[in-house]
Amino acid sequence: QCSYNCSHNGLCVAGFCNCYDNFQGQFCETEVANQEVMIITFVVVSAVCLLGLALLLGLYLYSSRHKRDNRNAPRKSGAPLAVMFTDIEMSTSLWAEHPGAMADALQLHHNEIRSLIKKHMCYEVKTIGDSFMCAAHTPEQALAFSVDLQRQFYACEWGTAIDDVYREKELEDSDDARPYWP
Image (tube, rainbow, N blue to C red; front, side, top):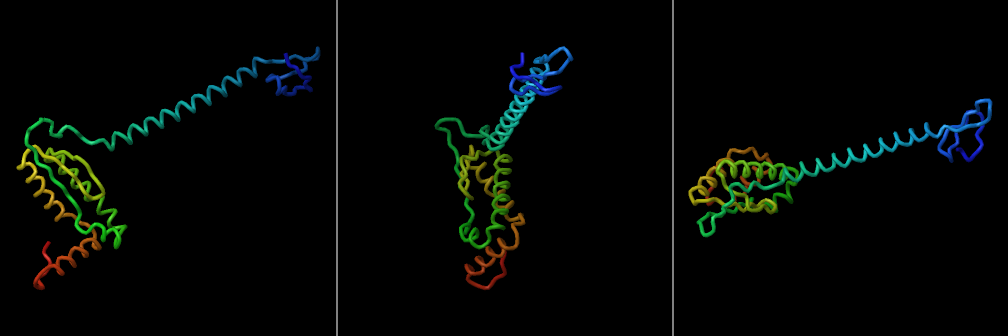
């Protein structure tokens, strides 16, 4: 029952019911109001659940994208292995002089190294900035990876600013005025 008197076809908000004048006095339809509350509750709870599922899916996809592939990690205790380190020469000055070009170059650098890690079945131990620590099962595997990596880097288009910096360094370091051949 509504605890308030309702005007003709008015809404009894405090009692959560609609009151109607049926010409025999007032009565309240609490059932209609309860259905509305249940529908609103269902919609809100469903929206929160869907949002939570979307968030969980996003976190899963983000975390699985950054997981390291451990299938090629050396596992045999006492078995020989080769460890390789990479570093971009003069990266600090390149970041200072050409931050935009360096960000693109670093992404390309990482993509090239990671593609060759997979190709040569090596293992990415860790990455810090522009440096990689990689492991291989044999010295021959490490050598093949390293030679391929140098060839890939030589063939890459790093951008004119980056290439110009290395060209200038090579010219400065050379004893004579030979043309630059990286």
